[in-house]
Amino acid sequence: MLKKTLCLFAFAAALLPVSVALSQTLMGVDVERGVAMKTRDGVTLRADVYTPAGKQTYPVLLTRTPYDKSNGASFGQMGAQRGFIVVVQDVRGRYTSEGEWYTFKHETEDGFDTVEWAASLPHSDGRVGMYSGSYVGATQMLAAISHPPHLAGICPVVTASNYHENWTYQGGAFEQWFNESWTSGLAQDTANRLIKQKTNALVGSTVLPLSQYPVFNLNTSASGAEMTQALAPYFGDWLAHPDYDAYWKQWSIEENYANIQVPALVIAAWYDIFQGGSLRNYTGIRTHGGTEAARNGTQLVVAIGGHSGWARTVGSVDFGPEAPFDENAITLDWYDFLFKGKQNQFANGKPVKIFVMGDNKWRDEATWPLERAKQTRYFLHSDGKANTAAGDGALSIVAAKKEAADSFVYDPANPVPTIGGPLCCDPAHLPTGPRDQKDVEARPDVLVYSTPPLAEDTEVTGQITLDLFAKSSAVDTDFTGKLVDVAPDGTAINLTEGILRARYRESMSAAKPIEPGKVYEYKIDLWSTSNVFLKGHRIRLEISSSNFPRFDRNLNTGKSAAESAAFVKATNTILHDSEHPSALLLPVAAK
Image 1 (cartoon, rainbow, N blue to C red):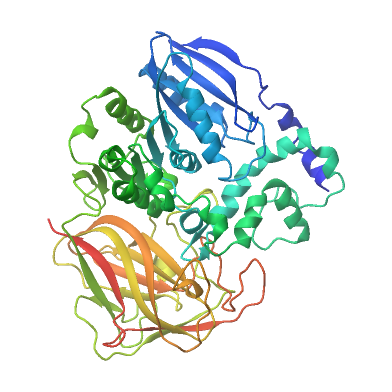
Image 2 (image 1 turned 90 degrees about the horizontal axis):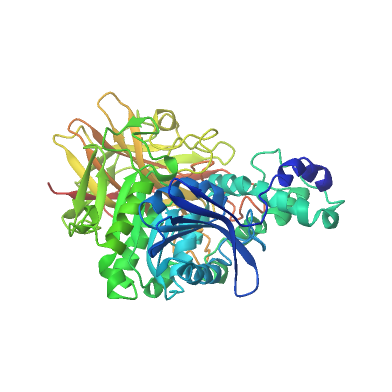
């Protein structure tokens, strides 16, 4: 019973912050908590405001978060001590702010209203910059496309560019692990609010207990669907809209770069779940931004970790003393440069700063993608026995001629497990980042293609694409690809990966079944990396049809796992010969 379930959280709900503004001074910073503003439709949103005690005029740094504004206290203090007014606001329907929470829906209008309100605060000099990442990056991007007059800069960190293709789906596959874990993490506050606001209306409802984890999943029972509608209606809508349709286009950043009129510091990360979207945001604003200031002033930083953790060691790899990344410090440096004209790292004339793995060093670049990176085809080869790392699969810049195809059986009941990679938001249950892929590579449903040990260091920096010629016995299936760096001792560390659902091979807007037995060309986006494959290492490609639970299992029937439990096995075949030149496309950077 929902009544019983909600009662489990009644005590926590009673401890929710009181919606009354409180003021105090801490370490030379005036802090006012719970400051109210009204949106254009009359909803009250609340924010904590951190103001330098000097009472001059200052630029404003604004963040709008669904994760509880009280968690922004550290940056608030730090920013105010650096000479900024810092505003940390709960978005609509979260924690102390009124209204109903629904992902993305209100962030453009509420963001516009909040920017203009923040610009009018006492001691504001009228310039507002936004900051922070993930969904908080989305609140920036969605505000920026409405170009509020007083918005002067943004700093979106590890966030998406398209909430269909690099938030909820990728290559047409449902991002099951992220969607379930992230949504479950947000459920507690929504449950608390229901206790305070709607308990009587929901008495008698039957749901799954919130103690279950994940709270939501794509195979919900009728009672689970009822709880999803009560606590996370957007999750059900995500499942109901697998195509890139009008539901998603209303929030597309990629279709609105021309409406972004301010410079951005885009912060991306290798092994981050939104890496692909972050890099698209950078190139999109640099190419299509609505003003010269946006196009020429936007800069890019690509670090290690993101949602996999800002640290020296990410996953199982120690990236050396240069790897740790201080998001708060870099954000403040950006606004020192942008708003105060300080000649720091952002003033050197090179807008791109990347961490190069393998060398494990930071490097400044003039462009992204790198102009000197040459797109190089590494063709797939075998005698038809590329299954497992012990097979005969090879990669070479020499094109294949006449070769036997490679086949494997993909069984949805026994999918290839996710081992590391760009994950969020539950590392305790599914560890993130770079990890040895030896267990995956021992499976017969994984094809493995490797170069010989390299005679010299080889740098690969930029977007990775898998051009695959394949057929299936089913009417639909998935194809996955993974780029791996293999050390001389055999340790196989994943770098980047991708997936393509066959029925979306032509367009994400319209599913189209495949004809069993027919060969199709699949172009699979493996996103990007910057890695030096050291002398003696090998470049490796893994191909399969599943990566679970990062992505939902393709049932090979044309139906999704959200609408059916029935599945069939699929025999999937990869061709690599003169007529079907399957290849891994790598941007090899000259020294």
